[in-house]
Image 1 (cartoon, one colour):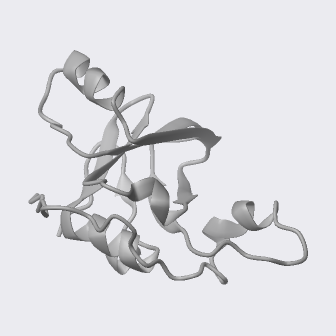
Image 2: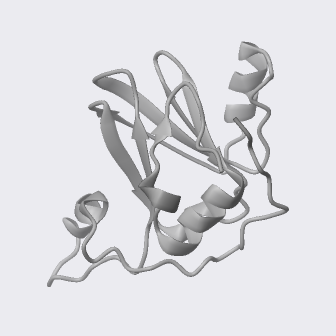
Amino acid sequence: MMVVLLASVPAMAAGRACVNSDACNVLRSGHTRGRTPVACVSIPFVKAGYGQVAMFILREFNPRDTPQGIQEQLSHALFKDSKITGPRDDFCRHPAKFAGAKWVVICDEKGIGWITGASLVQAVRTGKPPGGKRVLVGTHVHE
């Protein structure tokens, strides 16, 4: 599988409003008077089963590093989030959280997966990954 890296992700990418996205329902629930979030970036994923999952937004990441090295890299994330979820779910965050990001890494108890390159750029610009591809924990979204 090929991973294509781009020089950068725009600092403030113009995202599309998630008016009809189930991924943004959790963001809508806190808004009063029917207001919706301005925009969000959706990173859908698939993992082995029900349990903890974490998302790390990074400038740099070397997936071939040692397990200790990967943990060190993840500790320097621009932003991180976690939740308990089923096998198929989504992280939906405001585009500002992705400023300077070149990698989004998703981990569960059994492995890691990531989205990078043109796929990540498109997710940030449009609000969802190309073709609605989900990050498969244990591999990565590729071109």
